[in-house]
Image (cartoon, rainbow, N blue to C red; front, side, top):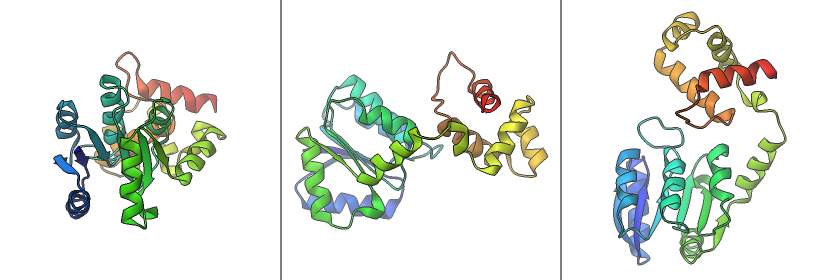
Length: 213
């Protein structure tokens, strides 16, 4: 079984390679960034993938978006998400496909290598392996208003965004770097369930969601 592995932490990536190869898997590609992951998943020899959610360059949801895209091209392509985070918007989309061959485990709750490998094999066989904490987190998000998810700092950024300020102007007003503002902005878009859409201005949609709250 030829796997694509995406993990940005070098030590963990190397450890996963050793574990997977010791259990009979072949690593077709081991990458740490979104462009290389997209290329690896496009390889017709790839038979399954083990992916982290957050990768270079933005460390937001590259892994999940790549998984969704790969399964759009190859329905039922087995994907095991192994992450520290539950990215709710894309996680819901990935898990709601109903096609099976999906896993979503939280790294800090994987306490047994054998259980992890067995779970991966179930996913490859077409099954579903989901950490209960992932389901609980997604269900909890459905019961709250999107704007309620924002931190105090994210609300400050959104308020300045509502004034039509650029990232540079927001950074100046809050005495932070533009990189920090960009990070907050990406987090706002994710928490407000605003995926990338070339036909819509997400800044405007985020402000509208804030004004309606």
